[in-house]
Structures are given as structure tokens and as C-alpha cells.
Length: 431
Image (cartoon, rainbow, N blue to C red; front, side):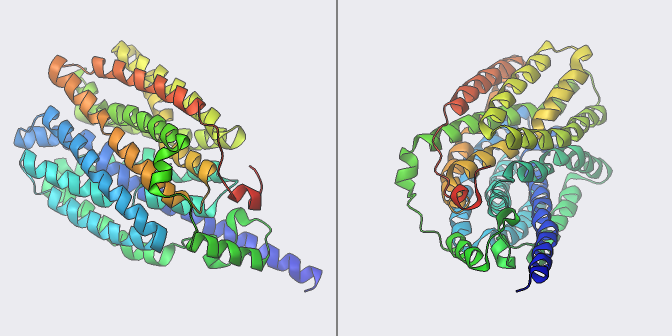
């Protein structure tokens, strides 16, 4: 091949990777958007709406949400196992269809039993479009640039707060709970055929390399074989005995507790302070818009320094945010919204980046099925903590103080993460 032909081929691959590779982060952002809207952010309007329409109490719904989180983690393990064999694309398609159907049924529930059962079903099927598939897709395409890639992909999380919550609120107020979720369910199902034509499980499927690294066709073919048929030594037993698995699982699980505790109750708390629902939702949306900046910021900090350093700073940031919420005064509302907003963009970004950095992309799905289950067991405590706090004291302040404790412990655990098992860095080079 002539030098000119080689340069042309390299340029063609670069442009193809730029268009296709970064579009994977956009699709992942959409999946994060749906996931957060259904199992976290959307509860800001679902809870007060169900309370007003059917008399179900906040405490009952928060405990149902916690139970749904705990039972739904079975889906994390099951879907991660399927992703290991089939890749994220097929799992995402099936899960979108199932999620849409369960959301439509959810809108017809008028009792706490029906509410809880449907929330469990939603949490289960959303595991197939949530963190396992999206994170695997991003880690398959990006190694050195994973911080920025996750930073872009997880913009979908704060976007759910900024867009999904007000849309759901408008639909419920203009039509009804049942009609609102019928519309939402149909939109989710419509994403399945779009995903079929959009997604490539790995860059190697398109003849490209992760991060568009300068690799030969033979090296790309070898990487493709390794990703599609990984010879993993990480059995479930070995993972459960691994220190880093527990440090990562518990630390980020605790940060999910904090995030869930704050985000899902922010609108009800502001309503208790005298704000009307629409205004409270507006503040939550403002926080989410700020979170779009935060998502990229945490990704940049990950890329610039390290995922461990960025995560410790993230814990400290959350402690300040909760402190501002604890003041309870309207004068600090805007500052609290800013801090919460920046934090919203971090948790979905930093946790998968730590897994990808520590264990590598070929092992990502295998390791995530364990870490995802442990995080899934821990994170619903956010619902329980805030629900119990409100039921017992008619205030969220006690819950916020408990959340500060979780953030402090998370920072210590993240600081202790040391060992690196990632074999990809030997191929692509250290970030």
C-alpha cells in the first residue's frame, strides 16, 4: 500500500470512528435518560400525583420503591449474564419493549399493591437498558478516553431530571396518570427498532479499534475475538473474594444512596417549604440543566487526574450540597440547587469508569453483574432512609444527616481502591 493510500485509509477510519463511536455515547445517553426517568427522577411527580389521586402515602410509595430496587437487582445479574454472551445491543432491544409494556400497565395501577408490583417489574426490565448495557457499550468503544465518553453518555441522567420530569408532570396534569404512562410507554417501545439499526456492540464490528487507536487489521481482529468470547478467570466466587469489588460496590452504592435520597425527594421537600409543584419541578429542572455541565466536568476530572481522585472530590461536593439542603432556608435554595445539579452528573459517570479502569472492557460485563447486584442491594436505602425520616419526623433533615455519613464512608472506601487488573492498557496504552 502506498503512503498516500495509507494516509487516506487512516483518515477514513478516523472520521468513521468519530461519527459512529461518539454516536454510541448519544444512544447511551438516551438509555440513561429512560432509566433515570422511570426508576428515580420521575418519582418526584409520580409520588405526589398518586398521593393526590389515590390516597397512597409518601412513606408507602418510598418503601415500595426501595423494595422494587432490592428485588429488581435480580435483573442486573440476569441481563449482565446475557450481555456477556450476546452483547449489549440485543439485550437493549428486548428490554426497551418490555419496559414500554410495563410502564403502560403501571399507569393503570390505583393501589399500593399494584404500584409496588409494577415498580418491581419496571426496575427489573430497566436493568436491561440501564447501567449494564450502556456502560458495557461505552467501555467497549473507549478505553483511554472513557472519562470523557462516560461524561457525555451520562448527560442523559440530568437530562431526565430536566426534561422527563416536567414532561411527565404536564402529561399527568393535562390528561391522567394512565394516559401519561401510555404515551411514555409507546415512546419507549419505539426506541427498540431504532436501536436495532443504530448500535454496534464493539468498534471491531465496524472494522475499527477502541479509541481509534492505530492498530493493524490483525490486532483489531484479535481484540474482536477477545471481547466477543472472553476467556475470563473472574468467576463469581473469585469476584466475591476480591477486595476491589467490594470497595467499588460499597463506595459507589453509598453514593447512589445519597443521589436517590436527594433527587427523588427534592420536589416534595420544596413543596413542604411552600413552593407549588410546578415551581419545585422548575427548580429540579434547573438543577438538571446544571448537571449537564457537571456530567462533562466529572468526566474531565476523571480524564485529567484519575477516576479515584475525581470520585473523592465528588463525595466532598455532595457533603457540601447536603449541608446546604439542611439549612432549610429559601435564601440558600439557589446555591443548594447548583451543588445538587453539578453532583447529578457524576454518579453514573464515575462508577462505571472505575470498573472499566480497574478490570478492563473484556471483563466489564462479567464484573458488573456482581458489582451491579451489590450496588442494587445498597442503593434503595436512599428511598427507605428518606421515607422513614419523613414518616417519623415529618421532615427530611434526619435523612439528610444520615446521607452525609454515607458520603464520608464512600470517600474513605474509594481512597482505598488500589489494584489494577486492566489488561486493555497493555494494548492501547495507559491513559
